[in-house]
Each structure stands twice: as C-alpha cells, then as structure tokens.
Amino acid sequence: MKKYLVLTVCMMLGAALFGCGKKSSLEGKIVDGKGQPLGGIEVVAIHQKDPNKVTKDDVIKVTTGSDGVFKFNALMPATQYRLGTYPEKYFGNRAIFNVESGGAGQTKLLPSPLVLPYANTNPDFIIDTTTGLQWARNGYIGGRPMSWVEGTDFLKNQTIAGKTGWRFPTKIEWEGLLKMVGGDWRQSLQDCGFKNMQNGLYWSSTTHYSQIFCVGMLNNGVGFLDDSKPKYLLAVHD
Image 1: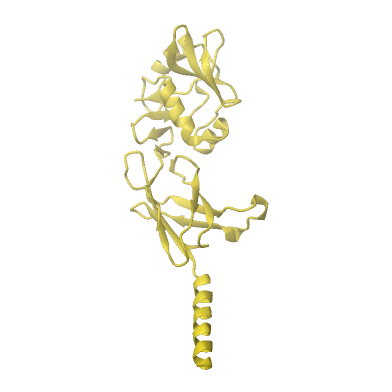
Image 2 (image 1 turned 180 degrees about the vertical axis):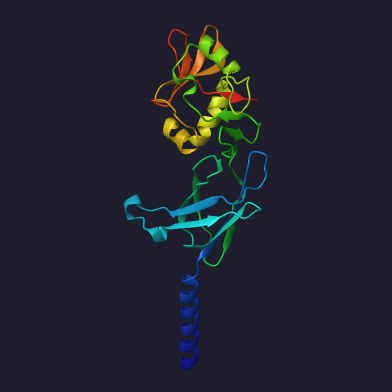
C-alpha cells in the first residue's frame, strides 16, 4: 500500500513538473484594409516586464505566411505580452495591443485579424488600401510653406509619380492617418516611409467659415486657423 501511494505521488509530481515545462502558443492573422492577407510581415511578442530587465530571450519574432497567419510556439504560459509589427511594406498601429498567452501546452487564437491598412510599396506615395487614397511621401512639397490658396493651386498642377491633380488631405483623412501612426507624428510618419516631414503646421482641405483645419507636427496639435501665415503642404490623390 505504501509503495503504491509513493508511486502515485511520484507520478503526479512528475506530471506536474512536466506540465510546468510546457510553453504556450499564440496564433493570429494580419490583413490589409480590404481584409486581404499580408504575407512576410514580421510580428514581435515582447514579455511585459520592467523595460530595464527585458533581455533578448524576452523578445520573440515570427513572420506571417502567404495566408497572413502567424504563430508563436514558445511563449511563457498565462503571461502578458505586447504584440507589435515591424513591416517594411505595410503599416498601421506599431504597438498593437497587450495580450495574455494561453495555458501550458495550449494554443490561443486571437479573436479577429490585425489590420495594417497602409501600403508602403511605391517609391513616390503611400496607399491607403481601404480607400485607394494615395499619400505623397514628400512632406516638403514646393520647398517652402505656402498660403492655403497658393498651395491649393500649386498641388493641382504639381506632377508626382506622373500624376497631376493632387490636393490637401481632408480633416478625416488626416485624422485616420495620424491615429494609425500614433506617437510623435512627425517621427512616426518618417518611420513609416514619409520623407522631409517638417516641424511645423500642415494644411488640410477642410474649412469652417474663414478658417482651415491644420495639423501641427511640432506638438501633435490640431485646430482651425486662418490663412494669414503660410504652412507646409502634404498631398493626396484620389
């Protein structure tokens, strides 16, 4: 009886120890603005701990397949991780969200795909894959700030990527882009492929009475201003 009891305890202890050594898996999918899968996107899971104590072993990287699916196979069970994407050709929210891994030996599925709606695939402009809107990369068009009237006319006649008829972004278009890049807008836009972004105010095409909606790169500010002072141009094309 004693031998049987000892054997049972040993088996239970061994099973517990074996279970403790199992890792957890996490699976998800990345798509563009129209829900199409994005392959070749690097996804990073970072262990949520004191940033000063994070080591290379706490950072795990995987790449999506042609079906947009990624899977982490060596996460610590029931542990908080921050997921981020660092793509070269597509972008959206860089720090996507915090997630807790599944139990030991289990695979946790993300409830919905992660959306990266901007395509960084053309040398002259960035494409909103949801609407098809094209954003010119150059944040210093014309080489100087201009009045709203002058800038509007200038963009109509400006040739970018062999196209004319460019315009200022609307308030809604600006807000959608800035929400996606987050952080310090100027630096985040540069990181996502825009060039020559200036530390100043940019025009939009949205007006309210005699004022125009503007975006400030110096302090992440927005507001309606008059046309008394020149501002920088960023262009979009439908």
